[in-house]
Image (tube, rainbow, N blue to C red; front, side, top):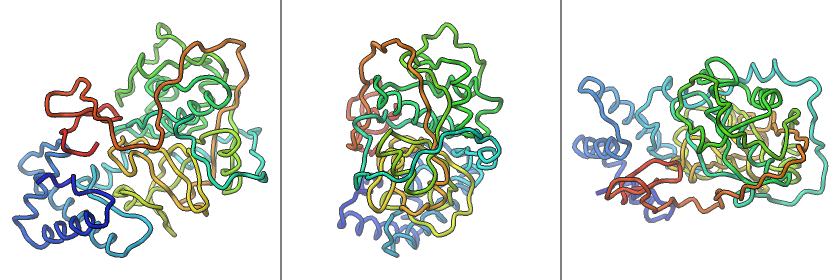
Length: 369
C-alpha cells in the first residue's frame, strides 16, 4: 500500500485515510508500517538511535493531524515532509526577519493607494507566476519572495515571464543569507547591481558561495529596479494585486501551518517565527500565496489564507519599482504555473520507475509530487 496515494481531496478517500491513520495511532504494528512508508516516501535514512526520536515526532504529528481534521475547520493538515522534524529544523525552512523589516523600510517608499473599484477576484497564475521553487533547509524565503514579485512585475510591466536566480541573490545580497533577511534588501541590492542572472545559468543550491557572477548573462534587460512600493492592509493588498501584479509578503508562521494540506488557513493568534512568500491572487474570503517549499507541499506548492490580516499577512506587501532601460528582452515567456498543480509526469532525467516533479525532484511514479 502506498500511503500517500490516499492523500486525495475526495470525501471517501479522506474518510479512508482517517481510518488508516487512527488505526496506526492505536496499533503498534500499523504505526511501524506507516512510519516506514513515510520514511521511504520522504527519502529519509535514519541512524538507529535517531529513528526512535523521529518516530516520536511522527507520532505527535499523526495525533495532531487526526485531532485537527476531525474538527472540520476550513483547512486540513497532512503528514508531509515536516512530520518528523523538530521545531528548530522546521524553522530553518523559513527566514523572514520581521524586526529587520521594520527597521529598514525605505522612508520614501511609495504606498499603493487603497481605494479602487477592484474585481472580486484575481489570480496571476498562468500570466505572471513562474513554477513553484524550493528553498530547502536554508532561511532564504525572503529572497524567493522578493524574486517572485520581481518575476511577476517584470512580466506585467510589459516584458516576458522568466525565472530569475535566487542563488545569485543568496550569494550577493548579504552575509549569512540562509540565516534570514528582509525582502526590501532584495530590491535595494537590485537597484545597486542593475543585474540578475537566470535560474538556469545560476541554479539554486541552498548554500551561500562567492558573489562572482560577472560572466553570467544579465537577464534584467528591459527594466532597472529603482526602489519598491509597499501595499499595506487588506484593501491596499487587493488593489496592488488587482492593478499591478504579485507581491512579496511576510507573516508569522505558527507550528501547525507546516502541516497544511489545503483549504483556507485561519488563525486567531500566530506565535511562530517569520516566513516570506509571494502573494499571487485573492478572492472574497482569501489570498492565494506561492510558497517556496516545493510543489509537494500544500496545494501544489500554494496555500490560501483568510482575508482580515491572518498572521499579519497584509502588514506589508512589497513590489519593485521599475524604470525602462530602452532595451527589449528578446526572450519568450517561460512555462509558468496556470493553477493546474497535479504534477508533471514527464520522466525527464529521473531513473526508471520515477517521475520528475515541478520543483525538479524525482519521486516514485505512484507517488504524488
